Amino acid sequence: MHILRATRHAPEERLLWSRDIRFVHRLATTLTVARLLELETGTVLVAPSDILTEGAVADVAEAAAATDAPEFGLVAVDSTLPERDRYLVALSAAVQLSGIAARIGMAQSTQVVQTKMLDYFFSLRNMHRVAFQPIVALACGGLHEYECLFRPEMPMLPQSIGSVVQAAINTGRGVELDMYIISTVLERIGRLEAEGRAVQGEPRHFALNLTPASILDPAFEVTSLIEQVRGVGLEPHRITIECTEQQAVTDVVLLQRKTKALRRAGFGVSVDDAGAGYASFALIAALRPTFIKIDRDIVTGIGHDEAKQALVEAFVSFGRRIGARLIAEGIERRVDLATLTRLGVEFGQGYLLGKPAPIPSAPRRIDRLRLEAPARPARVPSRA
Image (cartoon, rainbow, N blue to C red; front, side, top):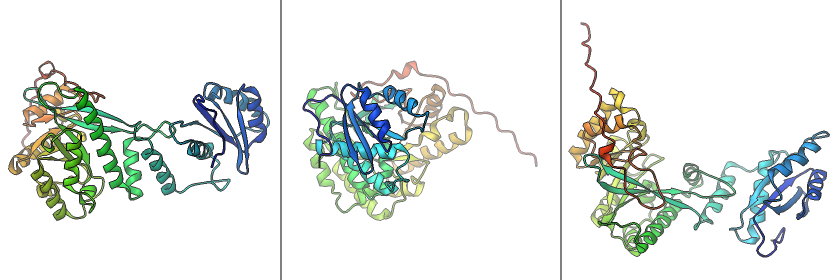
């Protein structure tokens, strides 16, 4: 259905919706180019973004406020969507933005809103970004691999990756989201590899996030993942699957079998956010991962926190017993870097070592970041 027909090669547009007909018509008369549409729910005004500006709307709204302040929603029209959809999506967003959707019977349940947001997200495949953050060997500063960080780009409805993931969990679309992200990231890596921009010297390795829920899904097959990886010019041994979980694992035994199949195929397996959430010692022991990633909340400030140091020491000892190597996330201070190195953590990542970038780039030279770890305070004997 076309509620408004755009002219061919039209510039970027904005859409305004309001129940105040006089306000919208008064605004329309101040613009050189505008299209009006009367609906049962209110009046719609569409015009080029450089004309229908927030300032122009504010001026007319301020003048109208002498009698009654108009309630309205003003949003950008996403020209990347099909013409049949873009104005309907913008209209829905404008009504919700007006703050009176509930009063006029157009309020939406959280699940409906999240479903629409995800539909919009999935329609923007070529717009989302991927950033690459180096993971570094703390002893020498050598590059270990890049973690691939997915960054959603949603012009009309900006969202963090966390809110997208939560919406997918709430609507039962977590597996669909994971497969979409994996596919998008691999395509991006494949393009960089083909351009020769991701490889300088030895072949680079990459870490991709995947929830245990997706690994447990009956539709997930290791052979299909191998085909995807090889389809972009990589081999499984150059990929680490980072298990990141927002919910408790429902079937540890099956997850063991599937992660073992991943390792047999050549993939590395990493457990993310160790020390927080659901990444418990018991789960890590069951999975026998290649790597254990220590949560950033433990890493931040560890240089001056003896309790955190004791916890990391336990992870280091635990990792050695099960044959897993440690990666510290979120390293941003030199004193934390020095402490983690002293405690025996083998790898690390964080803004201090290298920021995420659209093209895989070399980490900072670690010899320039060295700082002596602070000595542990002497323990005061307890009084008998």
